[in-house]
Length: 106
Image 1: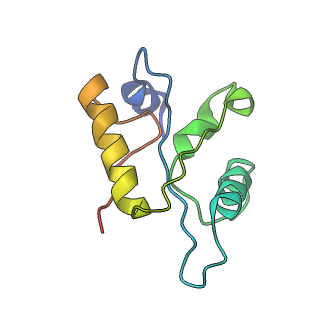
Image 2: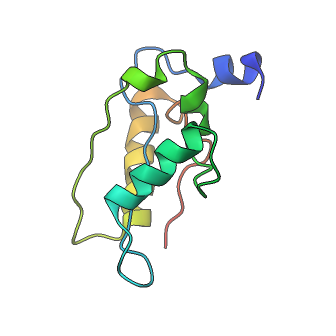
């Protein structure tokens, strides 16, 4: 990615940079801890199967960012992610900085 791509993705005034999801997966053994570990390993240059949010790792202060989560046990993670991204877009007129798509609904 280029500096122009990163600059074009930046959302002035936003405090949220990326909205992602974590689910139990097909075997029920995945979850938030595994997903965050994959995200961290990808940011450290490892092969971790987490391409989403990659813009985060281009920020000079990425190691100082805060991770927050919202438990959604009664909702589909894909739908919840898409809804949260849509809400962000309604407020800011663009996707969060590191979200390069609008999420996928099931």
